[in-house]
Image (cartoon, one colour):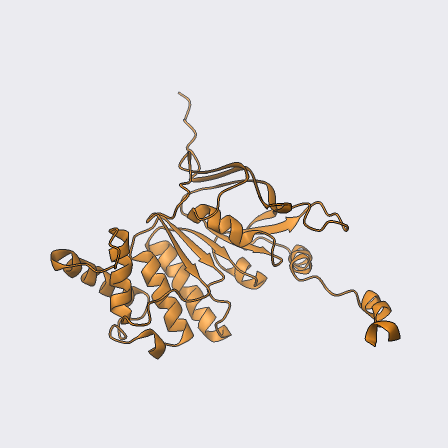
Length: 277
């Protein structure tokens, strides 16, 4: 008896994305299994966040197919996909607890985010538990302006997880945080990933962070280049690596692709008296 092959949770089939004549992504082919933690790295503007937004449903592919459980991803966000941005998406006039309850309310299609009666009581209990999990159990009555950057990001994560998503999307969530706070956030996200059995996609500009977190790292880069038309070709996934199994030379090669070293000779040639005047 032959075993039936299980279908991947996410399937990208020859994905392409362009805006007018500017090509952002091309020939992206990749499968993701449920429960994986993918980090996405690459130079600025190479389409990492665009790919994340496609999974969220606020961007659609120009070419190819992006499937969730074998079906085209809806062209709008859903409660099965939560997202956390670098900029905090919190309501300044609400307390920490009220912010998370409101996130639950919006899931119920409430225009205002307010819940009443039994629904609010249940949501309050769930929100309190979630805030405890992210380390904000002591700050339920505080307002966002009373929180540090790390605390605001914990709040944003609680808002995303209260809706019990299967997929958590993180778009450079720790870029503005100090190194010590980032280390705490890394531990938190890894703990929540395992505890809630999430499938995580995280964009980062920090290659060390990308290789430290999760289980798999993608490098977005352009394979084809046209010096006369830099936006004629898009990026694709040039490396798809298991975390923790990368040699030092390969790490340095990827790092140089993401953060190219300036050509000093070219800079020196351009620094002529005419150019400096």
